[in-house]
Amino acid sequence: DNGSLNIYDLNGNLVRELRNGYIQAGDYKETWNGRNNNGKIVPSGYYIYQLKSKYYTSARKMLMIK
Image 1: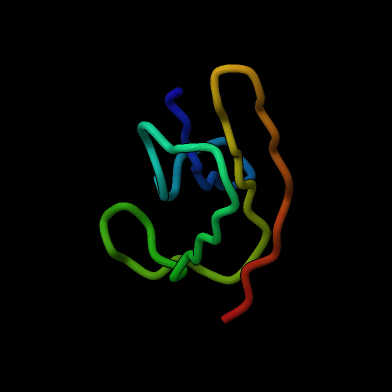
Image 2: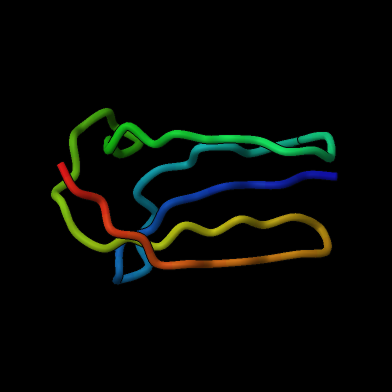
């Protein structure tokens, strides 16, 4: 089933799309390099990451420190 892993700022704006599309079940590790979708470095601070699939959605706050 299709899934996505996205990062948003605290205003709800999409900062970075890390994954989008079909992902088989299993354990995965994803690393964010602190850049937005345009390749620009974003400032340190709090961001929201959202993991979404057909049957599950989870969103958590994270702190990105340079």
